[in-house]
Each structure stands twice: as C-alpha cells, then as structure tokens.
Image 1 (cartoon, rainbow, N blue to C red):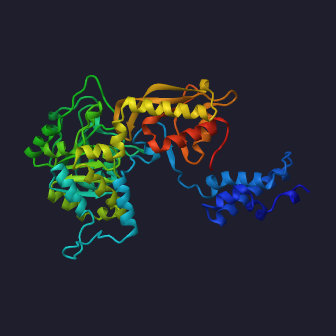
Image 2: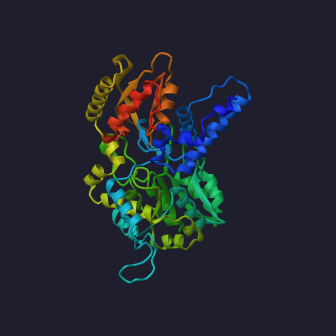
Image 3: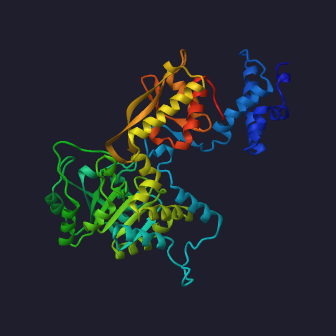
Length: 467
C-alpha cells in the first residue's frame, strides 16, 4: 500500500527544486537521480524499517544530493578560504584575466598552433612560448610538456636511459601524489646513484661517484620541505664546474619555478629560474602552475642541442600540451616582461603580496555583513593568523593574515558545518581549529566576499544552499 503512495517521476519533475535544477542540467540526468531516490525509498519500505512516504518535493531534495554524488559529480566552483594560495586540491594557481581572455580567444577560433604563419610550414607548437621563455630567462632554448614530473622523466629518459644519474640523498624528494625522484629515475630507465647523507653532501661526494657510466648530475630543489641544523649542500655553480670538468650535463629540477623575486613580499627568497640559467645549468625544469602563476605545465629551459634531443624523444609527443595550455602560458609569461605588471595581474603574486591592513579591512566588512544577516556577535570574531603559499613551494614560510572565526551553534559541530559549506554551490573550503571554522581572507577573491558571507550565514543556520 505504501509503495503505491510514492510520487511518480513526472510529479517529482514538476517540483520547485526539480525545475530549478533543470535550468542548468539535462532532463535525463535529473530523471536518473529521481529514480535512484525513489528506489532507495522503496527498499526502506520493503525492509519494514518504518520509512514514511516522502512528498514529491522531498524526493526532489533527495535526488538533488544523489545527482551530485552518484549521477554527475561535476567539479564545483570553490571559494578557497583555507589561506593556502597554491592549493593542489583546489586547482593550484588561478589564472590572470589576460590568460583567461587568451584561452577564450584560442578556444573559440582556429589558431596557428603547429604552423608558422610567415612561411606556412609546419613548426613546433611550443615555438612561440620558447621565444618568450628565452627572453625572460636568458636560456638558449626551451620546451613545454604537461607537468614538471613529465619534464623530469623526459629529461632523464632522453639523456640517461641505461646509464647512471648522481643525486644527493638530501634531494631525493617526493614531489606530490607519491611521485618520488627515485621512482621517476627508475621509470626513465636510468640508474640512481645516491651520494652524501640526508643532511650533508659535499662536492667531493659527487666527484667520487663519477664513472664512465655516469650520464648527468641532477640537482633537485627542496621546494616542499626543509632540512635545517647541521647541513651542507653543494651550490649549483660548484656542480656546474664539476660537470664541465668531466664533460657531464648538469640538470636542475627547480620545482616551483619562480620568475619574480617573492622576497619583496617579506618571505624567504625562492631560487629564480634565470639565476639557475646564469649559473650554467645545462637544463632547468620547473612548473607552470606554482609560483609562476600559470597553467599546469612542465617547462624546460637550457642548451639548444639538449632541448632538440628532448623534442626527438617519442615521449615528447605523449607529454605535449594542448592549445589552451599554450595560450594561458603565453599570456602569463607576457606579464613578466614588466615586473610591476606581474605583481598586479597574476593572482598568485597578488595574494602573496596582500597587506595585513587590506586583509583586516576585508575581514571587518564580512563581520558587518554577517551581523546584518542575523548571526550573533558571539558566534564570530576577526583574528590574526598565518597563510601558506602551498603547492610544493616555500614549505616553511608563513604569511601574516586575518581570519573570520565562526563558532557553530549549540548542538552543531565544526565538522558538520564545514561539510554543509563544502557541499553547497559554490563550495566553500576553510580550516577547522578547536571546533571552530577559520576563513582566511587572503585566498578569497574580493568579488567573492559577499557570496562567502551569504554561504556562511546560511550554513550556520543549518541550510545546504544551492546544491
């Protein structure tokens, strides 16, 4: 009898919730979610666990959650209130408006991706980016693949397959997602030769390890961790001199790939790509989506003949980037020809350089808005804290910031409140500390402040908004 009282699919589709969802989603996807929701109710009724017959609107609400979790888990837009600027889980660097406009232009029109418009002949798709990179870094040549792990693998496979690569033990890093330098070396077909100790490696350690099977000397920047105390590392200039002495190429994996000096924002200086080129490294690889502030890419700059070898490797085609990546990277690099423009235009650099005064001003504005939306003063406060650059860059460097701190209502919990914020639209990610939620305004865009305020107020009241 109860089963007969269940609303039909067409009745659920007429509800307010369903009609709102149909404005942005295909009807078959919503219909599938409704069927799943009705089937779950049927199973509860058949099991005799006292389940009630839901209304059509209640079924639509259940289908809404199923829609995103099971039927079509689309990637939601996120307001990043974690304070981690280059957040790997949240898409890393935001692109500049210049880069976004260039992507739209290239995505909606044909472009000269692999053809030289002057000669009309076929060319490398990274030829234009190469010119920009050479001008910015002083390198002879450059190429681009889809991420820095691919760049390192391509270099090692091209130059050292079947031979030995010498690396300091203190530089055998894991670069995220369980990708480790020893494993990349093994996959490339090269043999790892470890020298020195975790905390101390000297030039003599490298020299003693050189044999006729040595293919190259590899230096890996400790971009996502630090060893402090009783330590010693070989400077790149010293390693280059050793490489020249034994006619061996020196390769540096810089990881985060800074082209602008971040020390102007009051944090520790990160090695610049152009400094590594000037020091004589034969090849330097780095990421496009970390401190560079561009799209995901693995960039290699260095000697012309070595770059040419990389392009001849069959893996080069497997690792190549598409036109949208090149469009965004071109636009990002153009900003660096004027250092002040780079700090104004590139979101990663903007957020690194935000002042405490500006962050506190934004925080006070959000607190006032929350009060107007009915949240009690005792449930919120504005407190100083610290932000992180994140994304495998500057691991021990923290930026002073200001956070909105929210205390959940009685009977609620920080975990439950944080989940309601994450599953809404837009999704909101923040930090949880001692059963309170901390919203770091350094990583919240100015145009998102009003939206963030509304999401916090609604979630605090127990609502799931805009799923």
